[in-house]
Length: 600
Figure 1 (cartoon, rainbow, N blue to C red):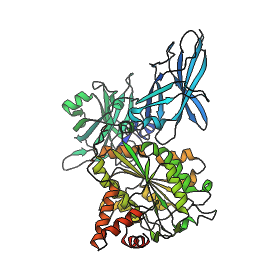
Figure 2: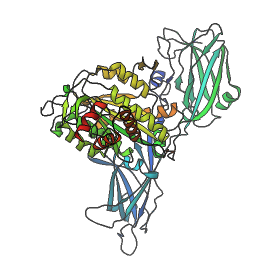
Figure 3: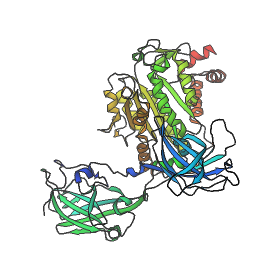
Figure 4: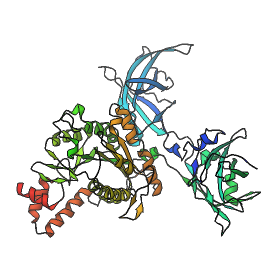
């Protein structure tokens, strides 16, 4: 039996997942990643109620309905509306509205409450606007219980009532995943692969997954395949007695792979008997188990916080801020660092409940308070309390500090990464996995500590952290592409291992500086995937309760105590240490402590 199964000219090293809607076109199917990405394509179902609506009727009560509009580039488009509820100032609407949710975008949304003044037999109705509520989707997603209560507004009018909006994720199917590991026995081909197909209502087959190409272990006459994971809904539409089909192929270099047989089966059969027999051999499921798969929204709606840290490059290659060519130009309307911080920060600040951000600089000294060049200093001048409240506070601190810095070099990332890794390692134990971290690192070019940086990124790949590097300016960013590691996982010579997962995203600012929406999208779109890969690797389900160890000191307090112990061990008096640290010290080094203590 012969047939073409794709056009591979060399054995595949890993499974390929196909587009569920690709039909019989295998090339179209296998080149669109499924990879359980339904967990990244998210929808919110919105429910509505009103409280104390203004009465717009005479002789009866308001007849109300709600229309939902999504905003884009200043224009709003209707995406859904509720039914009309008559004669009620406190309506609870039955009809919900479903919207798409995008983590990486600021999604303006408008809820307009209307009084329906005249019902007609035609499709049209006459309506009068009572008022509206404008907000962003992120505000709802990050609100407690995914519920907000807002005053309805219409110009200067008052006492129009309140709108209550609650949301929940609208799932496309179950969140069950199958984990299956096959081995092939008795097949004569040296190279073997198999393809899983969904069976349609008309009996047609839709390919959804191809295995890697396994070479026969001659001593055992067996082909061993890696474990695959596939959504239950993708394979059998959540019906374990619904048939699926597997086809086995002998791989050929020409691309004309030989079909060695196909077999219909149900997951019930596979879990009970584990063996699928073909004329030329058998496929045996060494493992076949079900596990739960969670979406990004599962974690966010259950209270997971996303904590943002920011690190800014102040090396000399950026140019002195008084020069118009400087990337840190004093004219903030043309300052590229500020634009990048603002566009990304205004999305991420919604996910941090206390709205406090740890902000650091590197590659500069600071007049009077930090005479030596530092590669990891607190932008607010206090390394033991580096958090700045609100994004606007970050912006104002940046503007103020910019005039106090002496730009220098070299460009080093590893000191910042060591600090952040240490912070997350400590906080992850204290917070018990209720927080995920993002480091936004802004730089203008080539770094001088590549291997040390790689070591720290590999270390960080085992932590709940995503690293976003924004390249500002037009310098050579080839080293940043290496750190992005899309093609080859980073290897740490120090740790003697590869990175556990992909955690770095590099974005060149110049490509998107005139389009802040695209900049934020390109910068943040990998975060949900990276967060899910961490949670999955550690088997962490969404947790509603925050299991914080309240007896543990904060990381910054712990760091302060460690530094105090170090200084006391070198003979410095406790009173002098406390007074100096309380006055603020930008970097935790003994040399800077001595400088600052003489100023206190």
